[in-house]
Image (cartoon, rainbow, N blue to C red; front, side):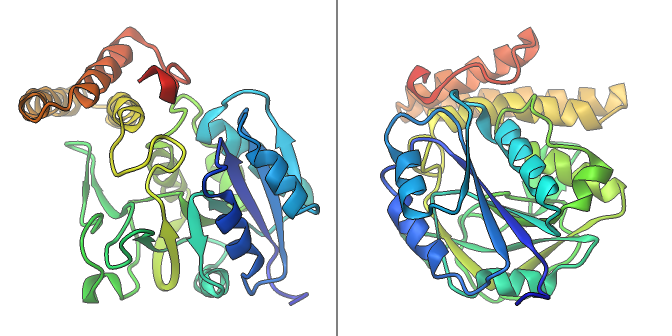
Length: 306
């Protein structure tokens, strides 16, 4: 394994006590030796960072003392990987359970110009695809052909090339991509920062590959309330979607088209959420919308605020 590419694993940790033991056990069982773990702790107060330090004493732990969010936390971790001169950075959420051979399969599918993402299945229902990997419609700001929430099957069991977006819940990125495309945009705080980064990396000649032989299991939104959609995720995803499309759609006409679509669908979504009594999600969506137009970006609200 000494000739194998070196992988710097970056984990942004925030109050993960409920599931950190299983994550660490699955990480210890991974059959790939040339790896180093950097944990960026975003102000956890539940003892999870102490558990990590006790379980994996060789891990590099960077304590931020506050909730820096995924984008900034990831950038801090990437700097640690650069200092070690790792070949690849592997982003991992700590609410995943890993299979022993997933990293070897990702490395085998990677090269100096290729980002690789695995098949990510729901932890609680391993028949279903979790997170997103596929296309992105920049006219409307919506994901396309990602299979998120759909059953695993033939379409998700073949390698796919040239993805436009993918979750950094688990993603292997050549370190050089950060030198070429720059760091993650910390304006996002969290959600959509990976789609922005992938777009910039592709402009520098990188591509994204989906490798289905690499498999991990994901507890959706483990650190932000759990489940496919939470008020915390609703707030940041709504706000950041507006910022993402505005950042990359330079044409005023194109952005006007997106804005009309966005507001029409927000009205429809509001009616649906009100009809089903999901008032916290409704409030979070509109707070995110208003905060974007007010210019309130970066870290604004915490899980407890929503």
